[in-house]
Structure formats: structure tokens, C-alpha cells
Image 1 (cartoon, rainbow, N blue to C red):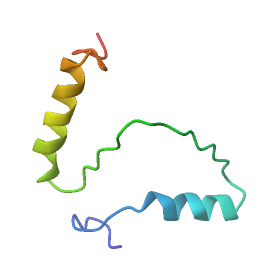
Image 2 (spheres, rainbow, N blue to C red; image 1 turned 60 degrees about the horizontal axis):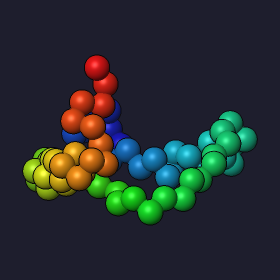
Image 3 (cartoon, one colour; image 1 turned 90 degrees about the vertical axis):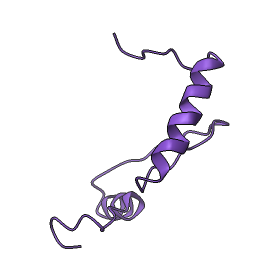
Length: 67
């Protein structure tokens, strides 16, 4: 990956794996039944915004998480 390359992806699983192998990190995996929303491309934004609006409407999240 070249520095400043906006098309590159930073693959967190690869980084975590490297840190684990170097014994520089510990990881605890938590299970959840919640849905995961991927935001990789600008086209994902509208879908995720709608999904969060629905979660707010259903009372899962407060409209303002931080005051």
C-alpha cells in the first residue's frame, strides 16, 4: 500500500494477525446478534444512514449518543 493512496484498504484482520503473531496484542472476541454495517465506499453511506435512522426510530439508539 502506497502512502496517500485513497483506493487502498487498511485490512484490520491482517494487522491484528500480525500483532498477535508478534505477541504485541491480545484480542477478545465478543458475540452479538446485532447487524454489522460495512462502510467502505461512498455508495454505502445512504444505506447505513437509513439503517441507523431505523434503529433510532425503534429505540435501539438514542438520537444523540453524546451530549
